[in-house]
Image 1 (spheres, rainbow, N blue to C red):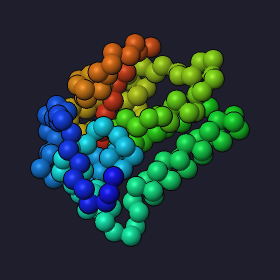
Image 2: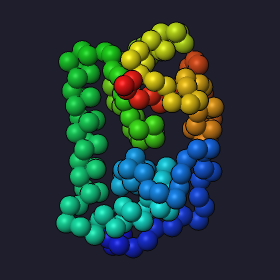
Image 3: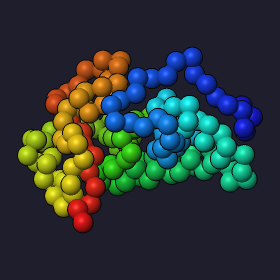
Image 4: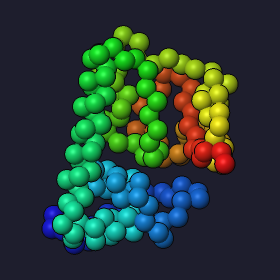
Length: 160
């Protein structure tokens, strides 16, 4: 696809409550540059405009993601078994945990809600706080992949 061509989808995904789709989001622009699905027309238009530059943002985004996955794969091969993936909240395939735990017998350690809350010590949770992913991102598991246990998510900002 030529830089500058406007990309439209036959449909727009359901917009989660509180998401402003009138302004581009850097996380959704990055998602678009990685050929993701969690972006809107305003994000695609901004990304296409950015791709008119000599910066080659799509190549850089793909290289960045490739480095992340190679680094995680290397760390996993060195025996590193715990990861804290602080992302934008948009799923990107493959996920860090998929790479880190490929071939592992017990890839996840289920933690209690209290233990997960403790991970956010020093941060203020953004509404709605620590909630099930289905509540936080209603469109998250549209393919109904079976979950191994309760899955929660949250967005937080550093306490001032």
